[in-house]
Length: 317
Image (cartoon, rainbow, N blue to C red):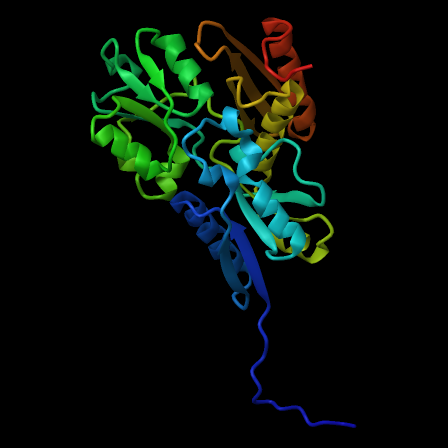
């Protein structure tokens, strides 16, 4: 039977659920994604769903002890595959090189400054630390590079969110720490940095400063929607760096660093592996056209493995 259209009935607006960790930085990154999606389609109803991950819940042990980076993404991946969320926002440095089956990193936003910020009670950079000073960091990469340049200081484990780590320095519990400059900027805390370390002195983590958006691999509508948010140069750089890490098969027990930068149609990449105590550091440089990002990353990894020798990178075959 024909029924008249009620022109006064409210129209249902399309809605999307964004999954994220609950840290202040993760929420700031999700807000950035929400703003970008709204700018493309103002009619979208966007909801942010906070998902507590195992990595967020365990703060008294290092990542190497509790299972590595996947602990920050597993529960979010499950929510994505179960349909509880439609897309997930990740710090790409926390995403395993093998993403969960059925999901895909569909786009990478324009990368923030990938450098590390140095926060110190003594001002200046590494050179400003007195002998015997205590540097707090949960990152083996940062610790190894600090010790390589300053073997006279002590590095101690330090986990927690950005505010917690800044407070430790402020209270004098440690002399200095390092944080991703990108995270400080996204939280409006860049002024907390005593200085910003040049990448020649502190090579960043793989994909540091890059936000990635994941969705279900078979969600064609979402894949199409996210295409316009992708920043190709950042995506190429992240792909190269992650290809290096994948070839190294590096775990959270091996200090690994990388940075790929786009100049025109060329990717220029540096990679590094080290011992946790910083006594041995191996570096490699190479370049390729952006379309060969994976090959470039693998080539840098092979050079590092040749330099370091068998067994240097824990987890490498």
